[in-house]
Length: 95
Length: 95
DNA sequence: GACATATTTGCACAAATACGCAAGTATGAA
DNA sequence: TTCATACTTGCGTATTTGTGCAAATATGTC
Image (cartoon, rainbow over all chains, first blue to last red; front, side, top):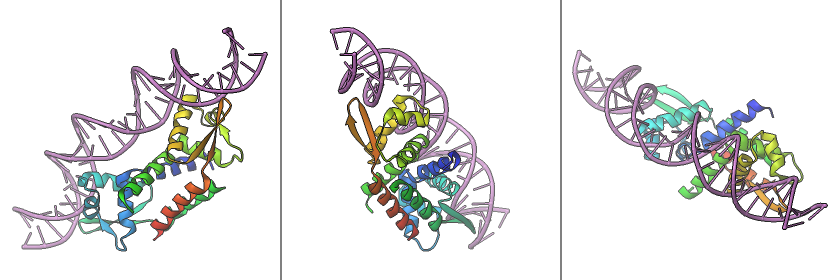
């Protein structure tokens, strides 16, 4: 695995490795329909600006996908893509 | 999933989500025999003190196991345990 | 004991990060 | 156009974190 790839994986894991961000991800895990940021910020009890920034990080790392819906922005998980990356790391670690 | 469990998982992901630490883990992935810290620190081109601290973090999170061998301390991956945690997260995300 | 090797710890420092508030932008509704 | 709602951005701050150097500790060897 080359350096770039490893660096990107590290960024992904770092994005997931923050409590509130992981909480957002878990919240989205249980949602069949996409959720807007207001709904998500209440699940962490943080300011909406904080949720906004966390969601931006998750979007940058490809964890979530954003879609504009009127004045809302609804988020959904990139389920298969992220799951696959985690599994491939698991495979590699297990050897 | 309760808060404590989620917090611990976040800590694990954070431990893996740093470039040099992830590099150490990858180095250990390819080793059948445990490696000492000197060997591992050379793979990241960092000071031995830095490697020592990273390995401590990884040990605290249960990623690696340490064993004293003379004046060395050799490290090995907790392969199945970590792989399982990553897979269970992947399963949860995939839904 | 004297010395070398392996590792940890104390210290200082720079950079990154998470946070809340307040102000700004965007969009829909009245 | 006026207002409300949803979200982002700028700013200041406190905390965490990664780093290297130097000193300390631990353990094997001579």
